[in-house]
Amino acid sequence: MARTERFQGHDYYNIDELLSEEHLLARGAVRDWVSSEIMPIIEDYSNRAEYPRHIVKGLAEIGAFGPSLPEKYGCGGMDEISYGIIMQELERGDSGVRSAASVQGSLVMYPIYKFGSEEQRMKYLPKLASGEFIGCFGLTEPDHGSNPNGMITNIRDDGDAYILNGSKMWITNSPIADVAVVWAKDEEGVIRGLIVEKGMKGFSAPEIHGKWSLRASCTGELVFEDVRVPKANLLPNVKGLKGPLSCLSKARYGIAWGVIGAAMDCYDSALRYSQERVQFGKPIGAFQLTQKKLAEMITEITKAQLLAWRLGTLANKGKATPAQISMAKRNNVMMALEVAREARQIHGGMGITNEYPCMRHMMNLETVLTYEGTHDIHLLITGMDVTGFNAFK
Image (cartoon, rainbow, N blue to C red):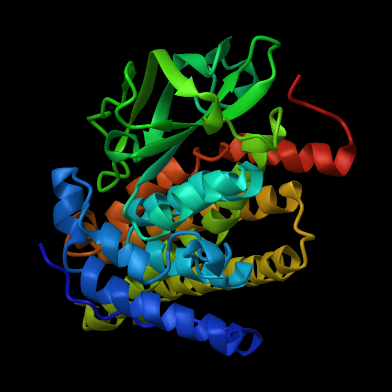
């Protein structure tokens, strides 16, 4: 069912006054694009469990791929708050749409820019920025999710190439990706990053079906059976787990912003519904319990907006720590999930239909709660940061 787009932004604490003209222009452009290109189709694609692949070109045109990377490589050259705002507006449309852009920019383009050679940057980044190439990120394995250091995917030296073996699981974009940034252990057990291209013999990417969540996102596996990867495709400037973890920090930062968009979409729909739906002779928004829900929702959204803005200002100065990013990711995702649930209740029975966005956002956010670090893992990251004790072991 095509949705009538009536969204209005919500800024209870006048946070817009803290944003620059560039931030507001970026938000306006992406918000308009989401309203015109995503909202009319997203319920249908989600219902069919299909990724709207035709939106890739549009995502590139609005600068959603690597917006904070340098213009030299075809990227936006914007600051980190602009990046966050773009993710927020995309996730207002759908978490799967934001995931596609987040993976492309933070988990594929960022490591190539940060850890790659200049030749690799010039070869891949412009094509990824323009949407000509779609990328994916191979870290999680079937038996190693929260503990990536336990990975068994490996490479061995073979003259002018590496022989890659192993598999990865829950990989956004993998079935349609042209390139994959893959993390594997070398013969000394050191984690290295490689750029693996579609078509390399022994490389396959089967799609995962049967998802109740992120249904409009393309998810699959990466399978490597004696894949011969040229040594020129090794990321030369990083060794160890710090490589993939720094990429995850970049992506988690985007999630902390992105989920605010999903929460605002649910709140906006619930507020309007409460003003229009009449029971017992008056709008349900006139009842105390409905007002309690709405007041708590906008309070939590406002707190998340302030958390994201402050995190963005720190990121612009290069001062945002991984632990601070973990706190924002964990808090804001749970906030958005709870807002979606409360908004669904306000809609009553209609809330479970695709005439309204709440149930779709709720199902999506169940996944966002556990990807890029689970809710509990992020709690332990904060705990370790404040106590100095490592509870992971």
